[in-house]
Length: 312
Image 1 (cartoon, rainbow, N blue to C red):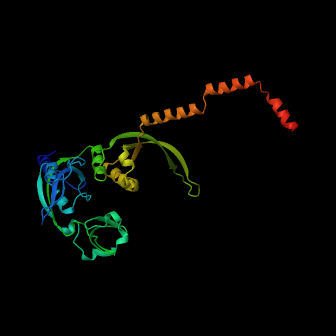
Image 2 (spheres, rainbow, N blue to C red; image 1 turned 90 degrees about the vertical axis):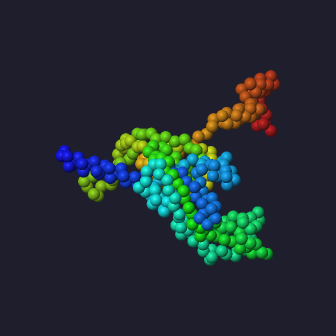
Image 3 (cartoon, helix red, strand yellow; image 1 turned 180 degrees about the horizontal axis):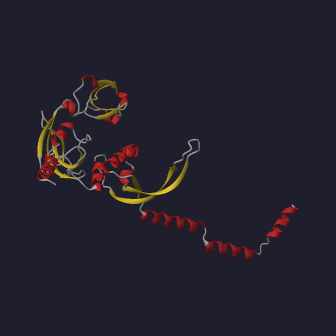
């Protein structure tokens, strides 16, 4: 390789390194978002900030968020500001209302019958779901309620202050990060390469013949997820897991996902013990032996009983 070619190769490598983070990359992002006008807290990964705002921090995870650039996991103006930067960089971005939670729409404030609102939610400020729309009650007068179906932050510009904490390379960690955006539960998972038998169509030169299939053994990378009890009864999981897991498969490049439901045997032991007691009450081997002995002591002859019945 000539000196000129080496120089060009080095320049290309430097150019690639200088490009920084790009769409499709997984990162960990720490941030705090507030409304521009009133400085109200919208979201944060900083536990101290949350405590200062009197937010209950016991049941929430305040670690940096794992997200994929270019996938809409955070508002587009923030993504655009991050593209090209490096781990450790910080930034401040104002997201206009139209790119955040939308402009405020007066037509989305409507009067509805109070009968459409559950009795426990018939007060100003209550969050309600009416005919598939989420809103909050403004006023209630007589049998009518004024409900605002705009997002609570509609019309608000949002300021994000962020820090790029790390780049995520491990595929299991990527999967955990993606799922944590939908579900606030910790999930055990791992990736294995499995041998799987598949039915594959055999190519035939004659078009009119019915297709034939043969079984082949192929290797498939599989993401195994241990389904926790919290996830098992999560409505969003039950309704949307197919779409969510397809996204995970595409993003971390695995062939399939297997969700494993774990049933604790300790609970079953007590149940089986109870069933054993019930069966014992119904009669075990000793009880059957006692019955047989009693019949023998009574000297009962079954043939004699049948004969007597026939005579009658």
